[in-house]
Image: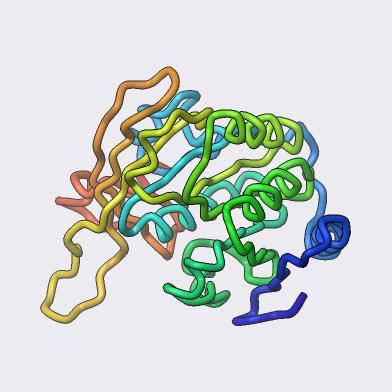
Length: 257
């Protein structure tokens, strides 16, 4: 285990028992404990977006899937919203192939999504099996706020195990997947297809806020919808692009609280 980019990294070994002990020790050192009386829903910010979700926000004690280009940033923003209502440790289980292609998570960069690098544990998994194993173990812990897992293949049985683990620990599981694999059966409460949307910058060359076209294409107890959403770093909340057409982020945040 070592720190990289201000994020604590735990590499999987060949001994499952050693892996389990190391994972539990790292979570105990970095995490606190959140009682089961914590919130069970994390509001995302935009009223229309939250109303479209079962329970009025992103449900905790459950798993959710996100796929497509831009999915990593969207998933980090979801984890940041969860962290606002359920303080604790965020465990990010990165697939080694994806880490090789896209690089290591950058701790200071995650702060833009409301995530504290000192409360993030990065698990390096060589394959889907190791990532899923780490996710399930982490989700069972009451010290964990959210577990992000980069998974390519996932069957219904394993997704149900993850859901049960999230119910046990009380946190949320966020599966970061290739968009094509979202067609597979899953126990996820919500399933999202995400792609980057045009920037809201007002001048050429200006770096505007992160904006996505987010399709809620599968949700238990909800109607599928597509949203053009933007994430505002100062307020750490989602908003709808349409809501900002005639106002500023600060005005929208004041209106919604």
